[in-house]
Every structure is written in C-alpha cells, then in structure tokens.
Amino acid sequence: MDQDAFRETYREVNERFCAFEKSVLTNRCDCTRAERFCIAEREGVHCGSQTGQRRCLRFLALVREHAQFALRTHEDKATLPHGKAMRLQVGGMRGVRALLEPENPSPLEVPDVDALLASAEQSFGDLERLPFSELMPHIAAYEVRPRRSRRR
Image (cartoon, rainbow, N blue to C red; front, side, top):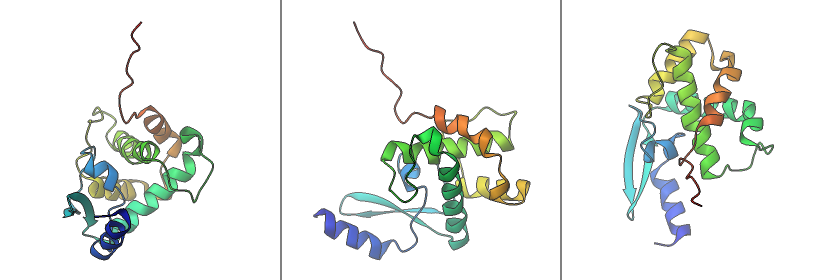
C-alpha cells in the first residue's frame, strides 16, 4: 500500500485519533480509552472518548507551548519530529504522575493517560493551572533511546 493511500484510509477509519498514539504504540503509555486497529500491516490507535481526546489534545498543546525551550523549537504549528513528540507525551505524563504522586517513583510506562489527566484536572481545577515549570525537567530528561557510550 502506498503512503498516500494509507493516509487516506487511516483518516477514514480513524475519525477520532489518539493524541498519544506514538507513546501508546511504543508501549510507553497506555490508556483505557485507546483502541488499536490495523491497516495493511500498520497499527493505529483510536480514542474511544471525545471528552478524553479533547483533554489530551489540550494538555499536549499546553505542554508544547511551555516546553519550547526544553524542546529547542519555536514553531508552534510545525509537526514535531518523532523524538520531540515522544518527549512531550511520555515526559509530560511522567511529570504529571510525579506531581500527583510525589512519593512514588515514576514508572517506565504510564498505565492510564486518560485517568491521569482527569485526576490532574480535578486536583488543579484545570489543566491550565498545572505547574508546567515542574513538568519541564521530566520532558527534558526523557530520552527516546538511551545514549550509547562511544568506544575508543
């Protein structure tokens, strides 16, 4: 299947895409609302909740706005490369988990994105009130792949 046909079919099949699709497909995050599907040997993720999708999209937009320095980017509208998108998604969710449960070490995998964001929204009153400065170290520290040491 060529790339254009795949994208067209993907949009038709997946009307309500998962905002955390990259991190769900790489098993760094999970969500009770995420529903996986396959098209021509490729996997996608559908969101089962319109409210959940809006919450996730709003969170990612807010984090992206606040993380421009940490991501070393200044373009608001440009699509982020995979590594930077993963830093926002996984690092951002690990940061939220650390805010809500400071006594528990941050797990390698975030178990439920929807529940975590709903809990953050309830705890802080609104996602706009999250202390984004406390999330930034988690975003900056997240590495998609651990760095390899150079052999000499």
